[in-house]
Image (cartoon, rainbow, N blue to C red):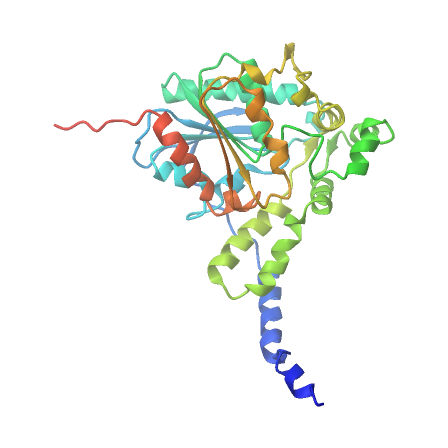
Amino acid sequence: MNTQGSINEFIPLFDFEKETKRWQQVYKIVNEPKPDIIPTRREAVWKKNKSTLWYHPAKEKKYKIPLFFVYSLLNKSYILDIGEGSSVIGGLTQLGYDVYLLDWGSPGYEDSNLSIDNYVIDYLAVAVKRAIRHSGIQEISLVGYCLGGTLAAILASITDLPIKNLVLSTIPIDFSIGIVPNKWLEALQNGHLNFDRFADVYGVIPADIMYAMFRGLSPIYISPMVNLVTRAYDEDYVEKWRRMDKWTKDATPFSGTAFKQLINDFYKENKLIKGELMIGDKRVDLSNINCPLFVLSTSRDTLVLEPQSLPIMDLVSSKDKTYQVVEAGHVSLALTGMFSIIADKWLSSRSEEIQPVFT
């Protein structure tokens, strides 16, 4: 029986010319200059050391309560304002919100002693106060993304600042699970693995080492290249890909002192979820959070898994609390601007809409 003909019907022909052009296009995209990231209209309203508080005014102000964004210390915050049509910040200003964004900046060697306590108390809390004063409004909505959400939750649990709403996206709370390999966690917990000496030697962990760490732990640094090969002629996709590629490779250094705290207090001891974490002289008790709360997770997240975020829902005292999972990845939620639409649906009824005055 001759089956060769029927088998060949199911084997796609290799188009050498087409594939050559595809890889030439990929090579061109990868090697062309990185795109300029043009931020949404803004002005600096406060600075401290390397950090800057940016104010992005609403295009046409619709809501009274401003938003204050806190991003991770581990990456640069411009992923939230990555360009027109994709910007989370830009989308929210278009929807009528005044937005503040705390850009942590990049620590230098002289900042090796900056601790998470410093970031929460001396930077974040002070910047929130400055935003409230600048806005002229007596309340503010705190919005935290990734580790920035962890810091936002920590601040909300220890402060008497007038936080009207708390929005937390892709937030790690339970550090006993996640992208860190189980063997590493076991070694940390039993004392066989210790990063203190590593952090002390460097003082500030260099950006290239931080990039290498994340690249080794998460496929978000690998899968985009696979996607580019298949979608190299999709102009809209390529434009977003180039912005994300710039951001993923534009790593930030990390204070050695904060790094040791993150490894020991969070990953090794898991103190946050246990209620044992101390920031300054205050114990971080998440049950002190009683404002309206919105927690967002993504179904394809490879950096912060949903089980890391979900426990906060049982730890807070908020009566008005919402948990939502959306079909997105950790970065694509911000890169596509999707987060602004989702956040607006929850925030709009809790941000005091300004009623138009008719004359």
